[in-house]
Picture 1 (tube, protein in one colour):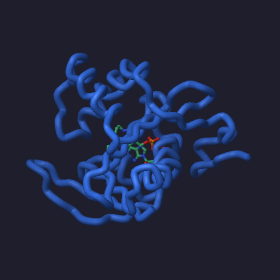
Picture 2: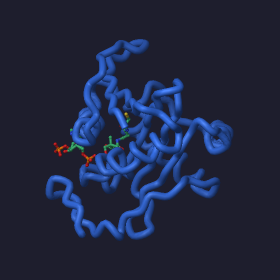
Picture 3: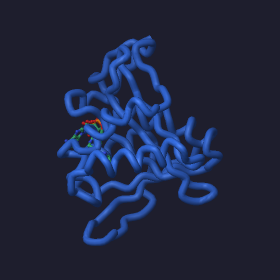
Picture 4: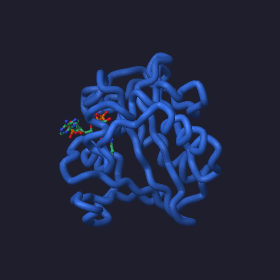
Amino acid sequence: MFIPAQGKLCSKSSDIHIRDAVAADSLLLWKWANDPVTRANSFRTKAISWNEHQRWYAKRLASLDCRLWIMELKNVPVGQIRYDRITIDVAQVGFSVAHRVRGKGFGTLLLETTAPMASSELKVRWVRGITLSGNLASQRAFAKAKFTLFEQRRIGEHECFVFQRGV
Ligand SMILES: CC(C)(COP(=O)(O)OP(=O)(O)OC[C@H]1O[C@@H](n2cnc3c(N)ncnc32)[C@H](O)[C@@H]1OP(=O)(O)O)[C@@H](O)C(=O)NCCC(=O)NCCS
């Protein structure tokens, strides 16, 4: 079976795996977090130090309210996605795809594949993502993964879109 994401991604589904993020992924996730496009699309654009990242990552891995997954193509990591339960019913999602493979459908596939997993593991009914108004790739990925625009909101100095999907 092949997964054609708008004709861009054409990989055997058996080549694509989702796995739990583990302690050994810390360096990779730190590098991805400091990717310039990722920082530019975040509320905090400043680079994240290694020490700060290590403290943050250890807490996320230990949290019962958090799930972090890595998507791999032929055993090579291509993206990460994190769900944090923010209320009894809602988990908030953040995701990114490795720079070299953006625009090939992996972001959409990450959202589609993991939203039901997050629902079942965190016992939430809704998953929600917030994008800056200028982050068109993220907005398109949410829309294609069957999230709908829940609200438009100003957060600090940023105009944002809140996307939500029932799961
Ligand atoms: C957002 C992100 C995860 C999307 O992943 P991706 O694998 O590149 O997305 P997809 O390939 O699934 O593409 C989704 C849609 O966005 C479009 N898109 C991709 N890059 C784009 C860009 N730079 N500008 C506008 N649209 C873009 C794609 O064309 C596709 O829409 P289409 O099928 O209608 O053409 C990825 O771009 C990324 O890692 N960005 C930096 C981190 C980030 O912004 N994370 C989200 C925070 S909310």
